Length: 66
Image (cartoon, rainbow, N blue to C red):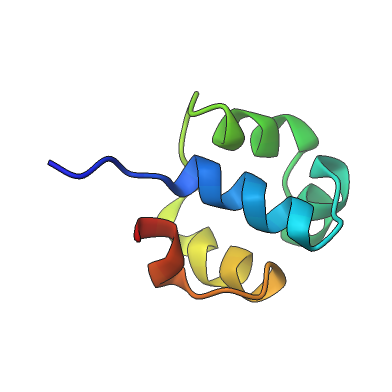
């Protein structure tokens, strides 16, 4: 079974776009702590956030699963 790598991709694309966890959180309307939890695999973002996350990070939703 293939591992879900959403956490790694969010962190990678966030850094490529020079965004802090706080900045990304503000753009999505969530706390920086939520972004941190996503990136540390403590939890995953709600599926409804994925299109917005992808748009802000200049990638596609499919990139989170590749």
